[in-house]
Image (cartoon, rainbow, N blue to C red; front, side):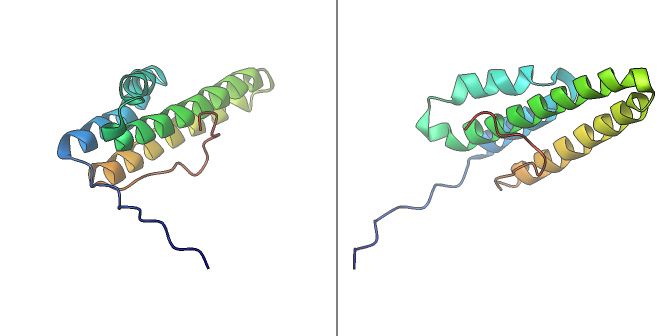
Length: 120
């Protein structure tokens, strides 16, 4: 039998890390993917900011998914179902961003249930 590896648990995120991660999720409501992209690019190479980087990447993946959903809804406007779909996508975007921000503000990792994971 092999010996288990000594892996230290990840340190709890600081209050600043939780606030920046929360901002990455909330900015999606106003800036779509731009806000989370900037936060992810700033923090992705800093090992001490792993929590912020992971949450910004998660928010970025979700906002790209929402952008695709808006695009498809926009195309479906020509068959009239798109008007309803745009409204539904908008509500889903706001609700999931708020749920993610609340979860991250308490220091928990959050994964969106309907995000396409383009960035790994």
